[in-house]
Length: 278
Ligand code: PAF
Image 1 (cartoon, helix red, strand yellow):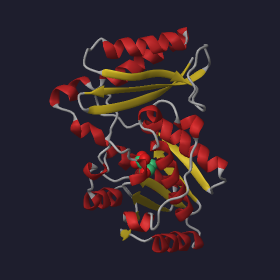
Image 2 (cartoon, helix red, strand yellow):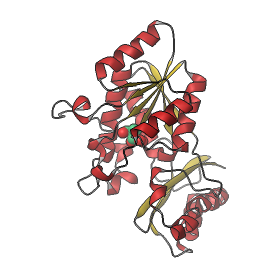
Image 3 (spheres, rainbow, N blue to C red):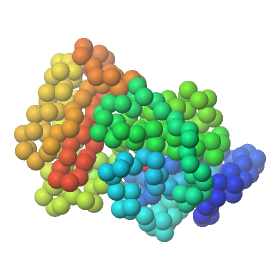
């Protein structure tokens, strides 16, 4: 396992791999790696010759009221998990390496970023889109693996790669769940025992929405909302039935949709989603 902390060395290493005819798999992360990340790295290792995991806590995607300083930083454990799942390289630049001067350029995909997660976190997805564009530009031609857990992020990343002609194949990977259905997330550690017990409700709400989807988007939305509110435990932020590509809310029955849900449970904000077909 090689840990690299400069853009120049990272470029050189990936260029050398491609020069030897090897394909590159990229797994962009902010560290604090868990089983969800492990599944992305494993898949990248199955499909690519060399896998690089990037670990960078990106200040651009944190709002003024979000605690960038408190974000878990666990590089040693991250390197171990990356190696154990088939990565050969970790790129862990510092902030000064990634942003050596004030950033005057932003990448933005407003029509995908403004709703849902974007509503309560202004600027968040511009920060994500900008750093992912930099990571793609630094890495060069590769396949890049992202979890479907952050479905809106994945949609934005897919679109920016397409619109900017970046030589990157964006691969969306299925959500990894705990045995009781809770989607794996770095935030789950913040749940108390009581909150952890009720947290899988979000997955059950999506399942209820999927069952109701044949009756139309309104029925699916109502089923999700009822399932969450009936517990009395959550502050529901949204339960939405959206077009899988545009993320626009659906009003008429269609063959295919994405169910999106976000709710606050105590101090922890949880999100989840599911693809549905009629
Ligand atoms: O999903 C994440 O961990 C981050 O948003 C990403 C894509 C690595 C960009 O900082």
